[in-house]
Image 1: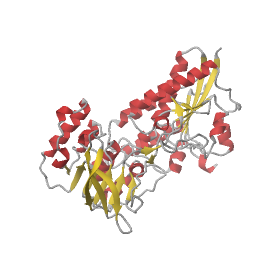
Image 2: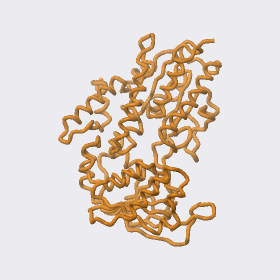
Image 3: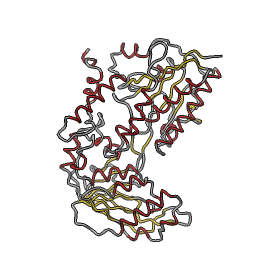
Image 4: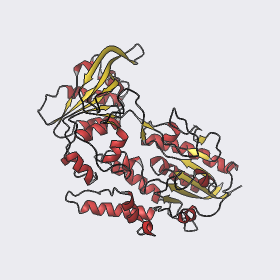
Amino acid sequence: MTLTTLRVAIVGAGPAGIYAGNLLAQAVKAGDAIGAVEIDLFESLPAPYGLIRYGVAPDHPRIKGIVTSLHEMLDAFPETGSARRTIRFIGNVEVGRDIALDELRERYHGVILATGALRDAALEIPGIDLPGSYGAADFVAWYDGHPDVPRTWPLDASAVAVIGNGNVALDVARVLAKHAVDLRTTEVPDNVLAGLESSAVTDVHVFGRRGPADIKFTPIELRELGEVPDVDIVLYDEDFDGIDPAAASNNQLKVMLRTLSSWRGRPSTGVSRRLHLHFWHAPVEITGEGRVEGIRFARTAPDADGTPVPTGEVRQYDVQAVYRAIGYYGTRVEGADFDERRGIVPNDEGRVLGQPGLYATGWIKRGPVGLIGHTKSDALQTIGHLVADAQSGALADPAVETDVLDLLDERETAYTTWDGWLALDAHERALGENHVHVRERVKVVARDEQVEISRPGVLTR
């Protein structure tokens, strides 16, 4: 039996949600058991792309290619026979605030959660809540111009600790160590440039509890670290005892260990800033009276299984700020079950447990690990199950037939659209062309300003 039109809502317009929408549209187009598909892609922010727009350092030129790819996916299925876009972008709408998950579920055959992980994972050590102790996600959101964070950031510390050995830790460390002049040609907002120009930082220390052979960076991220102008990379020979690049478990790690080895021989050049990489350090306490004044680590070493264990030695470093970059934590959606320990929606290969017709993909499905490629394979698995459920008749028909935009209009919700994003995109690019430091774009930061550019007059109706 052929389902005439499959209606699906996707919550989250980052890579996970966009991949899911694109793969679903392709699957229906290629099959014959479903006549057509209508997909509404909901996003709590006025603009699409999620962490690609608001979670990646602005000095990564390769991100432009990812954004272009995501743009093409959303633009690839312009209209159905009824002149309705196959994939509609509905921005500035938060599920649980502007519309309930149950209200979506009664309007669609299926709902896919792709909300990702926006919060920092907790680090439960004494002193973690002292002023001057920050989550990396908040700092990244600030320098990426997220509309819901303060416009200023305290950068009065001369010595800073960054805890973590992944790409986010490197991004945070690189932006802290980098001179603002070297970010002028990126899309970093002007308020961020002004903040970075007044930064007092001289030394950034990155700490990992494991050794160099267990780093979670990617080679390109590590290489970029060594190319920052007027910044010395400082390594410590004691951290590399017994480390042989030739014995690395894979080629990527071999390349990174060789990179680290080459930096060990660099002489100090007397530049104004230094970026220190420390290994075998497990954080035990942030110290200070009223604010961060230092951080204490247990020196670690591998046991017989390679697990880092304390050696009994404790080291203290004088720093005035600490950034934890030890991972992200999933974003709960009101109305969906949530595993507090893992930070995910409980699911079986993307089917949300106990809630037929509800699905998950991306980090909210499997946890905040992996790169863009993993997100695509995640979406492929989830979409495969949704299409199979639709073909078998397991999905209930929508109880409400009216367009969801009618409900949002009744509530005077200032939602944005794909055409609105195109207008905002053009506006930001024009700001970049006319900027004193010519850039590809200058981000509009304020939420209301983004909405007004996207849908003039909607906020004053």
